[in-house]
Structure formats: structure tokens, C-alpha cells
Length: 330
Image (tube, rainbow, N blue to C red; front, side, top):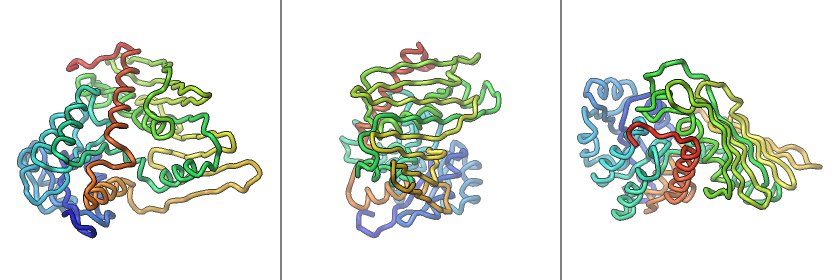
């Protein structure tokens, strides 16, 4: 590793649904390949390794990060465990891509950022949406000023999950709720466009019978006529679309979190459609970005810096503060 044109050897921490999608997509990563998986039991790790063609399986996370051939660890465990798991990988000298949300709160994230910077190790939040070709194209349109000055954003992500009080989405002991699981997408999208520090936050929330936020609405006011209207849910199916409105036109992104299309609409001009026909789910692009950064000696991705991720987490803290919503372990 470290030479341009090299190959990043990946270790996957966790064997759940998101780890499966990441492992599948490694087949489409030009600068990386899957080497190993770690789980809390060897049986689980071996089953995962056999399913996705990984040469090595480990029955503990400590054994996984101790593998000297692994360059980068993808942390795919539930978010209440991210702080401990990321520190385990960083303390072993590994680069880390951590599934979103980075942690449960900013107090947990700060020591991870400090450790990574102190040891000059790569660390990035796995906000895969940022690296999808349609979203990259949207950022280009915005940077080029194609829709003028951006004034309004509308974005939402929600799905109707099964009723399972003990499951990850609805269990407060597992950091359940809409804001951290679904809301991280529209909130991060607003950060990409307007930054992490709105002047004013207005919100409404429905707290369900398990004590977690089942759906919410946010209005982030950034001043100068700029605002973001955001919605998230884990018990309601939403459109999952995003609309960006500027003084000269607008951008529409269907199903923005896993976008395959984006539309540029400017008055008096023909609509421009950008289409991505990728064969992968889309997680390959974030892995490719980690590889690009590592092979070029970077310890952060310029597309989602640690400062931005920390700012997003502080914003989520403030929103939960408005709701008086704390998890049992906080």
C-alpha cells in the first residue's frame, strides 16, 4: 500500500446486512479487495467469508485488526458500538471507514477524531451517498452555479419497518430511532449544501411507545433566505426524494440516498438528465474513495471531512436536545 496504483486490502468488522452489501460491492472497487471479516463468533465470520469469497475469517474484532496484511477496516456494527470498534481499529494502526452515523453523539466522536489525527491515520464516515455519480454531478452543477444561488432544500428518507421493540430500529438501548438511522441522510445532505451550522432549528417529533423517535420534521434556517426542510421516519414510507431550489433553477434527485438519476431544470433551457447505470449497489464508490485517499497519502476525504462529520453529530445532538431524547447508555 501507499504507492499510486496499489491495492487496498479490506477487513470487514461485522456480518450484518450492511456488511453484506459492502462485501458484494468490493468486486467493483478498482483499488481494493476484500481480505478478511471479523465477528463475535468464528462460525458467523466463517459463514460470511465463505459467502462472499473472503480468504480469512476471525472470531473476534481484536484478531481481525491484528492481521498485518489488512490496510483498512470497514466498521459495520450497530452505532452504539462504533466508538469502541473504531478505537480498536485505530489503535491497531488501521485506516477506518465507519458506517453512519459515526457514533451516537459528538462526545463519542471527538476521541476518535483526536486519535486518528494524533496518529496520522485515515478515518471517514461511510456516507456513501456523497460518492454516488449522480450526487457528484449535482455538486458539480452547484459549484458551476447552474441554478444560481441555492435557497431551499427539501429532502426526506423514511421506510416502514416491521414492529419489533427489541430490534435495532426501535430499541433505545441500541440507539434506535429515525434521526440517527434515517435522518442522518437528509441532515448530511443539507450539510453538503449549506454547512453544519444553521442559525435556527425548528422541529417536531413523534416519540413512539418504545421511547424512540419514529418520525420527525426539521426546518433548518441558515439565514439569508436559505433553509432546509427535512423529514425522516422508521415507521412511515416516505418518497425519499430531494429537491434543491436556486434563484435560476432547480435540481431533482429521485431516491437521493441511493441516487441513480439527477435532473437539472433551468427556465428556458432543456432539462438535463444525468443517469448512472452502475451494476453495484453503490457502496463501491465510498470504498474507492478510501483507496484513493490512502494511495495518495491523505488521512481525510475532502468530500466529507472529520470536521464536517463532527459538525453533523453536534447538530444531531442539538436536535435530540430539543426533544429531550437521551439513550439509556448516555
